[in-house]
Length: 294
Image 1 (cartoon, one colour):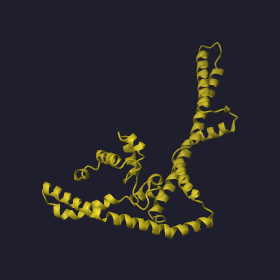
Image 2 (cartoon, helix red, strand yellow):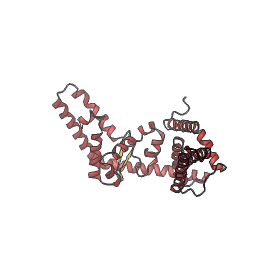
Image 3 (cartoon, one colour):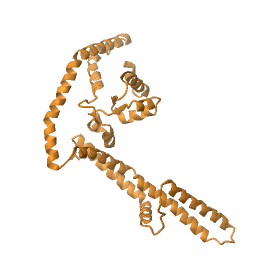
């Protein structure tokens, strides 16, 4: 464990711990990490990826550090938005290592052997003490959870009745917020499809104009005709693959809307991305109690 502390940039130690969790604890486990979103990607891209998926392993960000994260990441990985984690804050390891700071004065100038020996004694004693206190710890957490429910559930029900809000509404707000921020950074699939369709149609119209503007006896006519037929087949395949039953002509309203969007696409995407970043930043400042501080 001591060696791992000096190798925090290596993912192999974290992956070794994940494998142990999967081996010993089995399915439906959660691991908290300051950079849980990045850790999830690392796990999924490793040899443990499929096994972690099959066992429904969750990798989340802890309660305190999580609010400094990107707000989109918070909505997906923060304990506040995840069911089943109760009042756990996932800061146990930080408490363990903070407590080990008390050994620094004793081992700073010790030999490597005594350095390792004293740390081993410290953590062995920590394990014994916490094991003795485990039942009291679980009991206290259970009592705390009950107190929170008793105190705030009536207030929540009164608020819901006053404003006509259901439990389903509260859950949907979370999903709507996440979808809104995602749409600000990414085009909706329907818009992306319309843009691709218009681009394919524009290529067809260009090929059609080139073919009509070439004399039938001209040597370039055959080449222009082949290009037109190629574009025609491309449009037909696109429409078939995307279940488009109504062919868009240049007089079609959706065609003109999509064409206008294509012309201003870069500007619109920049504005929407800026909007999303501003809203996201305001949400992050609000969670950190820094909103309105400039």
